[in-house]
Length: 427
Image (cartoon, rainbow, N blue to C red):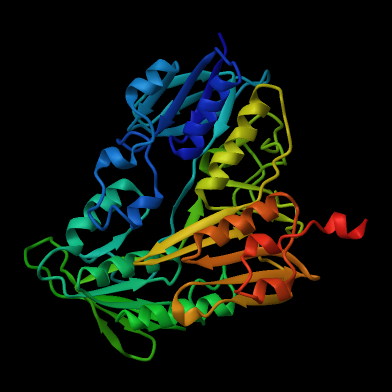
C-alpha cells in the first residue's frame, strides 16, 4: 500500500489529508506535527483566546475520533528532522523521537516560525512571542497578572495590534512600537493605516512609529542562575518605555528546513508551481511555507506567499488533487480578517499595484471601507465593521465583476447594487 506523509499538522495539513479522502484515496495517510497538541486554529490565539473567551476544545480542528474514522494516522509531539528520497520517488523520514517513516508521496505543510527580535535582552522574563498554542497558553495568564501594569507590543501588524487591543481591554497601559512609518504598512493603504492609528490612540494605546529598538532592559536576577524580569524597552533616542510585559510580533519566517534537505528551490518559502508541485516535480507544498505564482486573477505577476487560513485551505485542496494525479491550477480571491477590540477588518483581494483609492463612508464613524482600483477596475477592498459590504466586494471579485469608483463613493446606494460586469459593458 502506498503511503502519503504530510509533514505539518496545521490547517493546511489537515485539509490536505481530508481532501485526499474526499477524492477517494484509500491508501495510508500519516499526518505528523511537532506540537503536542491536536491540530488547532491559530487565528483565535490572538483574539478570543487571549480574552479568555475560548477553551481548548473551541480551537481544535478535528477530534481524534475524526482522524481515526477517516483512516488518517495523526502523530503529535514529534518532529521530522531528516528526509530522504529514493530515485523512484519514495523516501524515508526520520523523527526526533526515533520514528522511521517510509512514504511514497510527500507533502510539506510546515508553516512558518515566529521571527525573533535580534537585540539584547530578549531572554528576560516577561518577554513573549505569540505564534503557537504554547505561546498563547503562557501569554494569556501573564496578561492577567496583577503586577503587570505596562505592556509593550513590538510590531504594528495584525498580531501586534490584536494583542494590544486585548491588553487595553484588560485595563493595561499599552505602548505599540512600530519600526515603519505607519501601522500594517505592508498590507493596507495610508487611509486604513491612519484610521487604525487614530482608533488605537482613541482607546488609550500609545503608538510610536519609526521606533528603533536598541535593547530590552530588565532588573537583576533574584536568584543565582535565574534571569531577571523585563522592565522596559530602550529606543535609539535614549527613551526607555516602561514594560512589565513585552509581546514581540514582527512577522514570521517560512519553515523550509526539510525542503532544503531535499534540494528543493527556495525563494521566500518553498517554490511551487500553480499546482503546488515543488521544483523536484514530486513533492507538494501548501500554506504559509509555500511561495507560489500569484493565484489572484487580478493580481500582479510574480510569486507570493500568503499567510491566511483561506489560502491554507484552498491551496491544500490543489495540493491533494496534484498528489492524486489530478492537477489543477490554483486560482483564488484571497481574503483576510483581523479583530481588534470592536473593530473588525475584512480584506478581499490583493491591493498591490493599485493606482486609485476610494474611501466609502466616514472613518471616524468606525464603519467604512477603502476600495482599491487599478486602471479603473476594482481589485481589492478593506472593510471595517461592514461585513455585508465585504461580502458584496468578495463576491464581485470572485465573479470578475467591478464597482465603478463613483458608485463606490456613494454611501446612499448599497454596494451590491453597484456591481457591474465589465464584459457586459464591453459587449
